Image (cartoon, rainbow, N blue to C red; front, side, top):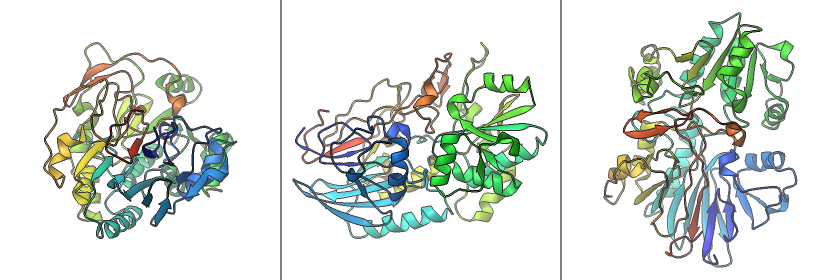
Length: 436
């Protein structure tokens, strides 16, 4: 215990300093209003939102890391250098580049660096400038949520246009959009801007929107709009069927994976083609915005997975091609995924080990129920929340029927397809394996 140095998105006792990449519930599991182990470092926006999530939190423990800047921390046992970098995942999300006696470690947290995203381009320049003065990254802890070639969904602005087109094509329907307590704000803002309407959100979400500076777009008055953004845990086919008994209503689930909350027919199986065929018709080209837009007409319509429900591929995580480009850019010595799953685990080394500076053996891609950590200096990485996006803890309030199928060589089970939970990592002073 006394040898632990850094904890990222992990909240057990024993580390000298703690870091929070962002405020999604799977990254704050174990953090509470009474937590008081050591200083907690995060971005300014996360620090602004954190008291709303943890009302009695001791704010004297918070330390601010301004994205795009480097900081030197003097700890009891060593000096630590850390650079915060915008992860472009949700408000306040950051990557963390650590340098010290242990070497150089980059922890992405959850991220989406899309081609032609200005924020991502600025963040990439920051990382490039820091890496230019270093021998290299020893370990890259990677958001491997979609580290499989079947995940070929479009940029967020394209998916946002798809959502707007669905809403426009249903002028007489109420619209229900499933979101989390944090994230996808810009999707809702774009809907409001293009359609010139307000968006309904629940009261707690309205307060978050105001903290984020969105003061005129959102409302809690249902009489002012037909478009409502609701918590994901309340979004289901059953709910939509009940609403349609009163008024025509459609639901839109913006996610890298479709939400399926009912049993398939006995003859139906989930497959990679079911999930991704509509996006494979056009390859997302990073050479120019014009080339990207040229492919919009080739990807087909968003999946209509029920007469009242659409799944739209709007994801705040990088797709496979973006992850691959990121690993090529960083060229780490070794690579570890921060996401594991109780139903399947996508080992990033299987696809990206060849991109590391030191040629890494390719592990077997297989189904796992537990991930074993035999590497030195790093704590366990636990499963992540459902759907590949960040459902909050509320998302799993009730039991669901089981789905079974095969997904690109990886076993799939339960309604969520991929049931994930995330708990971060610990970095130690020495090379002894983590005992926590």
